[in-house]
Every structure is written in C-alpha cells, then in structure tokens.
Image 1 (spheres, rainbow, N blue to C red):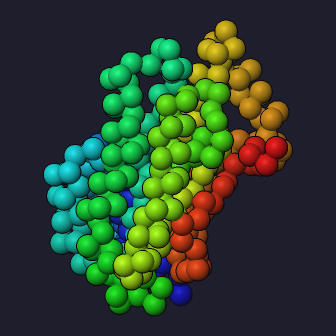
Image 2 (image 1 turned 180 degrees about the vertical axis):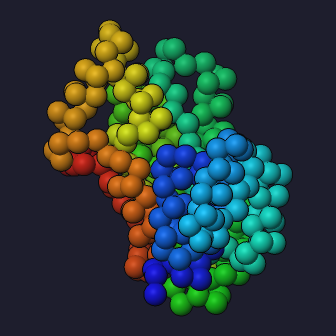
Length: 267
C-alpha cells in the first residue's frame, strides 16, 4: 500500500517547480491530484504527463487571489474525485525589492498571492476537508509553503519575509482553531531554503544586484558556500517533505514548521 492511497489532493502553483514535483510524488504515492495554476498550457501538460503514467490528475485554472476561482476549482475537483483530503497552499511570489524601492502596488500584489491566497484556500477548502476527515483514521491535512524567510530575517526581500512570517503564524493559529473545533484537520508549514527553481533564480538575481554585480554564478557560489550541506536544495527535497506532512506518517503533527534548508538557519 502506498502512503497516500485513497487520498485526493489539491495543489496550488502546481504547473511547475515545487508544486509540480509535489503533484508527481503524490500521484506516485497513490493520490488523485488537482493541479491548480494560472499557467494553463503548462499545467495541462503536467496533468497529461501524470495521467500518461497511470495516475489520476486534473488541471484547474486558479488565480489564488480570487474567491470565485477558488470556489470553481474546488467544485470541479469534487465533481471529478468526490472529496478533498489534502490542500497544499504552494502558490507564491518573490518580489526582490528592498523597503525603499518597493511600491504599495508591489506590496499589494505580493500579499494578495502569498497571504490572501493562503487564507482563501484554507477558508474555502475547509468544508470539503472537514467532510473527508470524518471518514479518515487520521483526518485531513493542509500544508502551507512558508520559507526560511518566515523564520528569520531576509537580507534580500523584507516584504517577502513579512508575508512568509504571516503564513508561519497563520498555520499555527489555524491548526489550533481546527483542533479546538474538533475538525480533525492538521495544518503544518514547510520552510524551504534556497531552492533551484525559477523563484530561486530570482533570489540569486536579487543577491547579485545587491552585491553590485550581474554575476549570478558568483551569487550562487556565495549561497552554496554558506550552506552547511554544501549544495542548494532541489524541488524533490521540498516535495518529499510536503508528501510527509500530508500523509498519515505525520498524524501527530499539527501547527508545526518543517525546515528543509540545508542547515542555513542552524547557524
């Protein structure tokens, strides 16, 4: 038996990167998966690729800042698979601007995706997650993508850090609320360090700019030099952690923060 057999998951930002890899590993572990994103062509291709391996996957167009689109995506998922056991709030933006440079519009866009998107997903998926939890030995699960920048200060993007700090404490508060109400929905966050993704490339570009250069290779070398484990993370490193938190292997975890950062915050 696979660790997610019989489970249905909805993953935002799933067309590529960490979300896409999480979808692949969840299907591999036996889950049926809804891949939600605004990158329609790439998202549909990702869903088709999973189905070609024998998995069950559905692409869902979803702007996480839109309440109506959340409602439509969840309804479509339930119509196809009948329930929802796992929500992964993965969609996120990185701004790469300092406080003096960032505009109000920058902040509003960043917080709309990184904060409002997590709130809407949690609120609107709650009824389906609560229903599924009644028939599951260990209930349902929400996994929120935070960041090491939600645990310690960020030298590159203080506004990003602000949003991810919010996700960290929202996770703990939601976990306590759902436990108090007896909903049997576990809520945990995962905190990646610098990962080899499109967003990771943005982080490196910002670091290079702050060093007064356009040398991305030098910025990468600097990051790796600071990492005790000696390399940047991969999408698989993070996706494996998400699958763990979503599975019954983490049945006694709620309100927890799983740090997957190569040791950077241990220093």
